[in-house]
Length: 274
Ligand SMILES: [Zn+2]
Image (cartoon, rainbow, N blue to C red; front, side, top):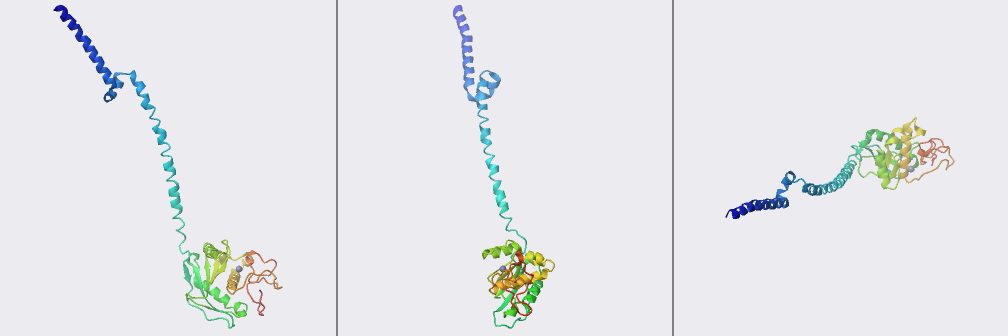
């Protein structure tokens, strides 16, 4: 009996050791106990821990490309959207037309076309429509040297159905309207398209070098020149008619080519300086 008891007593610790060993092994394999690994076992952990640590840098490169395209994409979007609303916010008064009030008596008594005209200024020019109309009236109303000398008749009106509209506009608007008719005014010159006479604001204000000392003379010239187009005249060159004066239908903006300055279609004696 003693001998059996001793054997049994010896078996108990052996079984206990085996049981503890199996418990420890089961604990290492259980994922629920991973948190205890670093504390209990230091050997096997580094092997497992660096493995998940390696995939960690993997998501970081994934993060890098992801944030890169995202900030790049929204950048052009706001810039594009910023540029788009910018153009529709031009100076106030662009293509807003102020009509010169009132009218004039009929001038001329010839048998050629009777043209009723309206005078307008683009609001953005800051010009006074009535002041511009005074210059247009005086130029077309010059019965000694103006177009009336050739038989045309004029009268200013405010009517919407006027046969001619003389406008002073910003260079950009002149370019836009003239360009739509296929005429390149380049921001510096004027044009006539249909019944519209489009006078460049810069030219109206400062003229051209030939008439720099007398901008009103240039204003008479540009009115006579563009109205001449409305009457059916094309461009002329210097001394095409043998006269020393530059024809009013010459593009004097580009130089006189030796001709003398002249802003009227007729000499005082009635000779046509064409
Ligand atoms: Zn011309």
